[in-house]
Image (tube, one colour):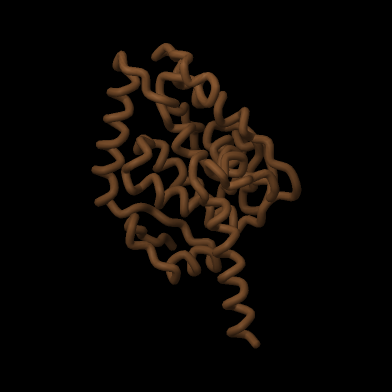
Length: 218
């Protein structure tokens, strides 16, 4: 069973159902046009001569360093892998899936520049129950839940580990078993995937939904 989500109109009740029942989700077709438009703008900017942070420049103190067009994919890959520094036990699968859904809703608004094929991979991972191993500690939530979301994105590029219907294994193997291919990140995609507070929000919502369940059962 799959739930259709309209970015900007998703309700708490929908999120609770996804958290409780582990539903697959997909974005409403109306979101595709905005996703295409934003991805096109980023691709155009990456090919241009103007310096744009995180697209054709380095990050942080390396913002003045220009990145050649041929190196943009490696830049995004390096960004993901360098932020996979979480520690602790894996986050439970229900909360991790909720984090993935929240990220999907966010990029579905068409403001992140994430390409359609990357969005579709995230949808397919949820549909096939490929759940990244995300350590439950390591985020300060300042410029986003960088480390937890990096572990999510690592699975999307075939790195790190994932659970497949509860079995822990290398991400590349989990994707292979369900017929999915790791994505090669385009310009800005790594930045778009790890910036955000979807980890913190998912943890907060899990607490809320769990408390609601306990109150209803008491």
